[in-house]
Structure formats: structure tokens, C-alpha cells
Image (cartoon, rainbow, N blue to C red):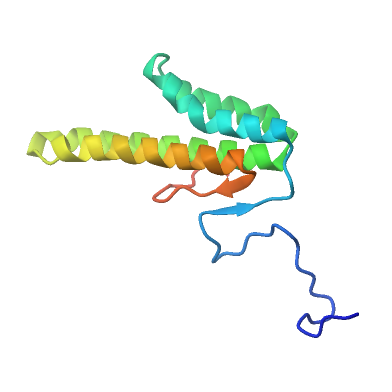
Length: 141
């Protein structure tokens, strides 16, 4: 009946994320609607191609509206917003480094990195998993 490997009083929460977990882990069964909103929170950055600042406004709006209803959506919106702030700073630094020539290589690399990571985050959200962007400054908590 009792599992001897677990000490009394120490319960393991399904979906709990440990500090040593990979960049994505499952939360407690998000609904399809939560998954869809979370995917949108990541993919809205592509609207920034046409609508300036939508890559910041989209995740922020999601955070303050739907994020109040769901921890899953809040986590994804916060992570997406932090990543957009981070990549903006990285792109600004790469743009400045064009003056010394290295920015011509760095700027495209930052853009490719951003696209790949956003797609990975959107896929994780669609599977009901959390995702932590690498090289992300976590300024919004």
C-alpha cells in the first residue's frame, strides 16, 4: 500500500517543475482553449512584421486578460513577453555592432534564433507543456 521510496508527508505533485527540469515540462492538463491562447501568445510576434510593437503588445495583453484566468496562459504569456524584450535588446546590440562589422553576422543570427525558439515554444504550448526560452532575461514576473 505505502511506497517506501516516498517519505511520509512528501507528496510528488504531477506536473511539478523542478529547478533541473528541461526547458519544457507538462502542467496540469490545460484545456484546448488554454493551449490555443498560449500558442497565440508566442506566434503573435510574427504580426510584428506588419504591425509594429505587436510582438510586445500581444503577450502583454494576453498576460493581463487571459492570464488572470489561467496559470498556464499566464506562464506562456510572461515567457513570451520576456523573450521579446530580450530579443529586442539583443537585436539593438547587434545593430550597434554593425558599426564594427560583426553586426552583419549577428543580426541575422538573432532573427533566426528568435524564429526557431518561438516555434519551439508554440509547439510546447500546443502539447500542453511549459517552455523556458534559453538566453532569456526574465524581467516580467
